[in-house]
Image (cartoon, one colour):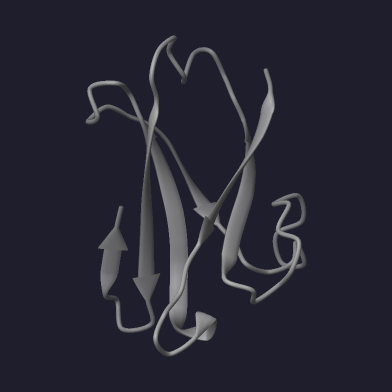
Length: 93
């Protein structure tokens, strides 16, 4: 089991405070089998200790997770990021 950190830079025309939530979903090589979904945080690890976010409110949302061979198969794994703003508008990449 290994610990990994994942980060995404998120910008919003109204500023970082307009971003309500950011999450990532790890999917298998078929790009449809969901393996794991975690929230990302931009809190400087204050509200979510252990998320490894360094600077609060800088637009870089981060979290750490443990890999598990039962959840992550051998082969390619893809990441889908989702950001939702205060008006519940969603962007996925």
